[in-house]
Image (cartoon, rainbow, N blue to C red):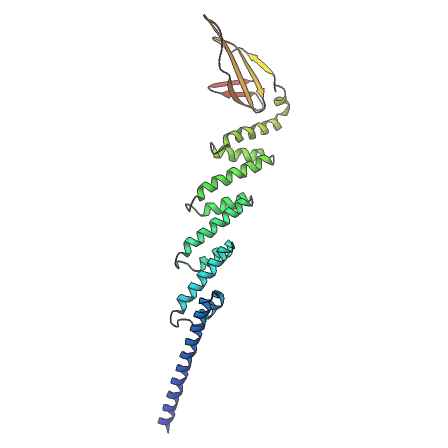
Length: 256
């Protein structure tokens, strides 16, 4: 009797295993059909439920990769970056994460969120032209600050950028605005007037004409051959509590 029971149980177990295998096979085929028809979200759920059956784990990753690619094509860069990141080192997912983040940074730049763009491009390191984009974002941020009359912040960035694009010119303009606001009456006094001074030596009669943020120095020299007018020098100038400082082409003129 016991032997009969054991045999019956064995038959029942085999029947259940066969039924289970047949069920997984049907589910797998259904999942493949979903994948082939582009229903990646549903297919991924089915493959995930099948666990280690056949290549279900691999197919699950393929579905996730396709989902991430669709998000990228739809310009959902945040969603795509997150989806590719979940795939780790599957295929070229790590590279695709960078591509998504690069697009996010460009989007921030277009929206004039320069701080966000600078941070995003900086995180990308040497990916594509990210470092050049960091510099460009700083430049655009400085221009925006200048245009909104935040001259001190703008001046700090323009001097950092040095000779990038028109940074030197904007640095001069920013500095002029800073000094003009701080020393308004001092700046106003010499504007568009000519001021004469003795240059010493053979240069007996020099003049400075102030115009906005720049100054023009004219020099007249005398020697045995008479009077000579030299080429004008365009200079920059600044004002502090003690003096007006004019600098240009080796000249350093201090006006108390």
